[in-house]
View 1 (cartoon, chains in turn brown, red):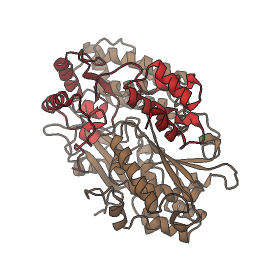
View 2: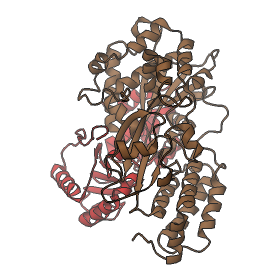
View 3: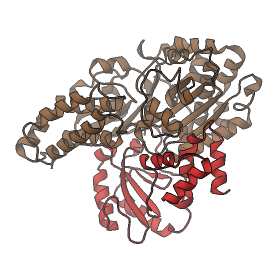
Length: 421
Length: 170
């Protein structure tokens, strides 16, 4: 039986308070690193754990930290990506609302490791309760000396500032987030230079997701071997899975990396709604290509999902049952990307506009015989040709819907109506 | 504190005052309800930044309103998880009950009705945000009760913490 670690406190009604966090051993990891480990040793521990970033791309966290130049006169920054705009995903919100000190401790240890004295937590503006609880927790942590000048009587100075987003999904893309933090329109930057070398205010910057950061104190206290022993070798650790859609028990589940998708959906989330059958599952937020029911025996980890042409992404698992029109789902996904395209590059800005128009007419029963070829050509024109992964996410999502459910698209065109209405 | 003082307080968190434009716009919008041109110019003047920088943010991010909105902004999520839980039925119901279409404001200025992209609360879909609060697991009856309660509290301060969060995994 897997014992939750990241969510261990959240059932407590006072889980957001410092007293609860301390009672469960909170901030001991911070004290340990400040008094027993050099920053390089902390980086080595995180490298040894093989922690991979929980924001979507799965880049090794310790390696990302090690890219920050040691010799650089500029201040270094740590940015926490708490923008969480990926449809189907809500894990970071729950951590910030119910266990904000876990994030604060993770930020402090990570900042110490990379040599940063300032962190910005970029929280999406909708998350008002998370922002309030995080603000309160930061004030509590200051009061007790976990933040501020000479943290826990060490030479480490550390401040955390919350920066509220204002409703732009693209801010989840790390370089767009930096632009937004600098007070500009959130549009992605060309890489290189990578943020570790020239990020916020052209200074060395590390950007980590909330869930990544909250893994860090546990790695310090329990050791990298504990972490690496959970789940598959190449993507180990506890993982937060967000279950939503047409499933009996939507919610947030903490389970090992690599758990089979079928087990997650059917055993933990209770399976399909009464009288219905599961038709498809989106495993990692709408950027992740959907998987038809017959493909659900796949491990929920970075490599297993990549091997079947999808991705773990944010682990936002959306369950779709047999009452649902897949053309409608695909249309809604592309509408989202179209709405959220920052407009910087043409394939994404124009291609998604075109794709939405084609999908609308197909869904309305007014599709032309060559519309599917048009959609496939648009996917080809967008994928791999955009500044950031937003265009790729859209193209992959549409491509998967066409690949696995083409007969539904064809039926819309041939019958000149939606078969589900 | 005055708006200027609040903006100055926000600005000290950043080494570059341009970074404070977004926080300043959120402060100004809370103060004025929306962000007409003179307010945008005042924000630029307080921060000592180019006016065009303020204008370009106010028009890029969806949370900023350059036009007035109703006292209660009903923001129904209709992204995939909420769509699968029939948010479109709720939208139609609210359009009927309020007598406005999506994007409109009731003639009494009480309600503006919008659909929004994912609110990040898919576990309690369908979800709507009203002001600072989330309301989840919505159906027609809950929408009606919510609208009645908002009408009853119109004119009073709103901002209680949402109590609609479902325990994890349940």
